[in-house]
Image (cartoon, rainbow, N blue to C red; front, top):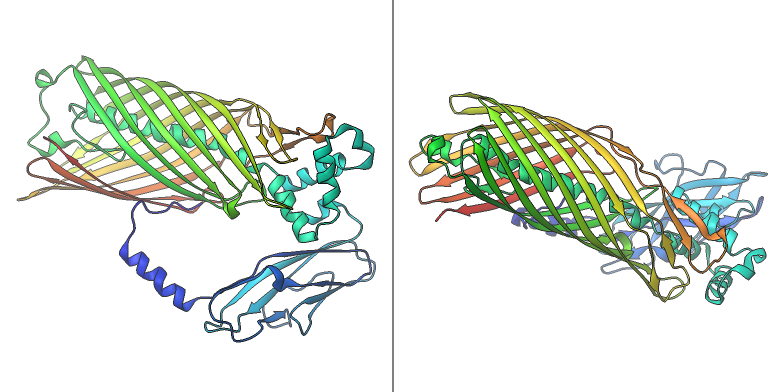
Length: 521
């Protein structure tokens, strides 16, 4: 998963423009083949490869020659034919799966190259022998049960016709169709709710942090990071000068890219939202309050596989107690939302499958921190515990496809712990104040009731169309690091910038860039 910058950077755009002129203009795509035991197969690997730019002639194909570094076939021999196709001869008596790599050389103005993997299934296996991902194999096993002639009385006419079409598909199209039928896009919804809750909880903690600084929380929160302005404007106000009621608000934008795995599809997502809250001071060291948060989440799946949209509304109450360097915060919240899904199936014709459902979530969070201040430095170690209980209602898909699914109820209870350190350093200048800062944390997740999602093929009245898919598991430990900078100018203008990265999160390489400003009237 990669998190894209929130704003375009001219230098990055220049690098992208240069790379277009330097790197390969050919994309080699993985291929699949199937052959009986002791029989040769010819695979036209160039059929699905993509070439751009001016081509001077036919491309060149090569396989392992002992020196190329390409992966050779382990249980057979692969050789290149004059037309660029590859002949694979399995070893005598071998039955099972074999793989090898080939490299294609573009015969064009850029002379680019690319490498792809060829998977050959030797034997009499069914549809499952074409797939490598665990969840796709689960779907393939279900299809073999549903489309077996003994099950013909239990399926709809539309599904019967779709099953008949399977026998006329090439290995490549059949593997592609099974991947499109597999509703693995649905599996990320519980993780989405967890990530949205983590961001919302952090935004409210930002307001509580300013309370501990002796400030009215309506002063400044930028992109989820609180800035104790009063400390940089001549010291915090006394408790007698503080209003009992304060308002705070944030606006946030997140962009994420998730790499595909053997269990879940790759996708890109964008979320936009805002938080507004009100705080009431019971006494100088005790505050209570509430916050309302709204988030819109948009997901686009890789290879035009479909999309997901979700609107989530949450209401959170909180309590904040602090004395000297010690602070303790507590939050309790409830969220409700809607989820709309769309899956695209393109084999043998374009089909659109849609669905809609609702989500609910309870969350409980507590954080303890201890601040150290010396000269312009402020260092604050913290420990945070979050518990969420998420439920996504069951629903049936709709559309013009024979492969419509019934999606079972999804539940998840998750406990996460974060241990971290944040720090700031205030520098005063004639034009204002510069406050660089950092935040380091290590986070551990633990899920219970995170069972596989149950599905059923709606066109089958028997239990043959029932199957389940496993989501990716939680990460036992990952890390977040952020560098930020605040510029506070005379007249009330403040600007903010930050870069954040996530490390050791499975299938994730995350980078986030934040920019913002605030103006006090």
